[in-house]
Length: 94
Image (cartoon, rainbow, N blue to C red; front, side, top):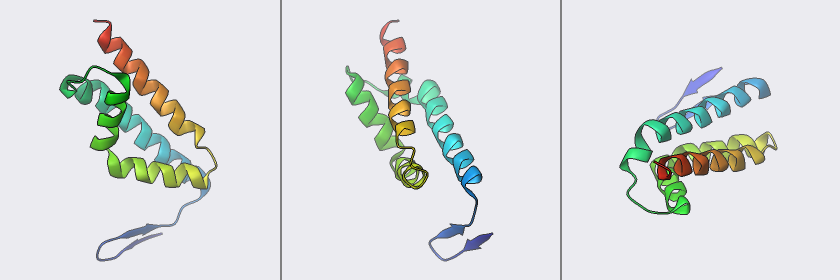
Protein backbone atom coordinates (compact mmCIF):
# COMPACT_ATOMS: atom_id res chain seq x y z
CA UNK A 1 0.00 0.00 0.00
CA UNK A 2 1.24 3.46 -0.84
CA UNK A 3 0.00 6.66 0.82
CA UNK A 4 1.14 10.06 -0.38
CA UNK A 5 0.96 13.03 1.95
CA UNK A 6 2.10 16.60 1.55
CA UNK A 7 5.73 15.98 2.54
CA UNK A 8 5.92 12.25 3.15
CA UNK A 9 5.32 8.86 1.61
CA UNK A 10 4.15 5.87 3.61
CA UNK A 11 4.80 2.47 2.08
CA UNK A 12 3.66 -0.75 3.69
CA UNK A 13 5.76 -3.75 2.67
CA UNK A 14 6.92 -7.06 4.02
CA UNK A 15 10.48 -7.73 5.22
CA UNK A 16 11.59 -9.24 1.91
CA UNK A 17 10.48 -6.17 -0.01
CA UNK A 18 12.23 -3.93 2.51
CA UNK A 19 15.38 -6.04 2.06
CA UNK A 20 15.18 -5.56 -1.71
CA UNK A 21 14.78 -1.79 -1.35
CA UNK A 22 17.86 -1.66 0.90
CA UNK A 23 19.85 -3.76 -1.56
CA UNK A 24 18.83 -1.52 -4.47
CA UNK A 25 19.90 1.59 -2.53
CA UNK A 26 23.28 0.08 -1.68
CA UNK A 27 23.86 -1.02 -5.27
CA UNK A 28 22.96 2.47 -6.46
CA UNK A 29 25.52 4.04 -4.12
CA UNK A 30 28.22 1.63 -5.28
CA UNK A 31 27.51 2.20 -8.97
CA UNK A 32 27.34 5.97 -8.60
CA UNK A 33 30.56 5.93 -6.59
CA UNK A 34 32.32 3.96 -9.34
CA UNK A 35 31.03 6.13 -12.16
CA UNK A 36 30.88 9.55 -10.59
CA UNK A 37 32.23 10.15 -7.08
CA UNK A 38 35.62 8.55 -7.74
CA UNK A 39 36.11 11.05 -10.57
CA UNK A 40 34.99 14.10 -8.58
CA UNK A 41 36.71 13.30 -5.27
CA UNK A 42 39.93 15.31 -4.96
CA UNK A 43 41.01 14.21 -1.49
CA UNK A 44 43.85 11.90 -0.61
CA UNK A 45 42.42 9.51 2.01
CA UNK A 46 40.00 6.60 2.16
CA UNK A 47 38.23 8.11 5.16
CA UNK A 48 37.78 11.34 3.24
CA UNK A 49 36.31 9.45 0.31
CA UNK A 50 33.84 7.66 2.60
CA UNK A 51 32.79 11.03 4.11
CA UNK A 52 32.45 12.48 0.61
CA UNK A 53 30.18 9.65 -0.57
CA UNK A 54 28.11 9.86 2.63
CA UNK A 55 27.62 13.59 2.11
CA UNK A 56 26.53 13.04 -1.49
CA UNK A 57 23.99 10.41 -0.36
CA UNK A 58 23.14 11.75 3.09
CA UNK A 59 19.40 11.03 2.94
CA UNK A 60 19.94 7.58 1.39
CA UNK A 61 22.29 6.64 4.23
CA UNK A 62 19.61 7.70 6.74
CA UNK A 63 17.10 5.46 4.96
CA UNK A 64 19.58 2.58 4.92
CA UNK A 65 20.26 2.97 8.62
CA UNK A 66 16.52 2.80 9.34
CA UNK A 67 15.96 -0.16 7.01
CA UNK A 68 18.87 -2.25 8.27
CA UNK A 69 18.26 -1.32 11.88
CA UNK A 70 14.72 -2.64 11.51
CA UNK A 71 16.00 -5.79 9.79
CA UNK A 72 18.78 -6.12 12.41
CA UNK A 73 21.47 -6.20 9.70
CA UNK A 74 23.69 -3.19 10.39
CA UNK A 75 26.63 -5.31 9.22
CA UNK A 76 25.52 -4.58 5.65
CA UNK A 77 26.35 -0.89 6.11
CA UNK A 78 29.81 -1.92 7.28
CA UNK A 79 30.08 -4.08 4.17
CA UNK A 80 29.16 -1.05 2.04
CA UNK A 81 31.95 0.94 3.66
CA UNK A 82 34.43 -1.86 2.97
CA UNK A 83 33.32 -1.90 -0.67
CA UNK A 84 33.77 1.88 -0.94
CA UNK A 85 37.24 1.61 0.58
CA UNK A 86 38.10 -1.06 -1.97
CA UNK A 87 36.90 1.19 -4.81
CA UNK A 88 39.08 4.01 -3.51
CA UNK A 89 42.12 1.72 -3.31
CA UNK A 90 41.56 0.62 -6.91
CA UNK A 91 41.46 4.25 -8.00
CA UNK A 92 44.58 5.09 -5.97
CA UNK A 93 46.51 2.22 -7.58
CA UNK A 94 46.12 3.73 -11.08
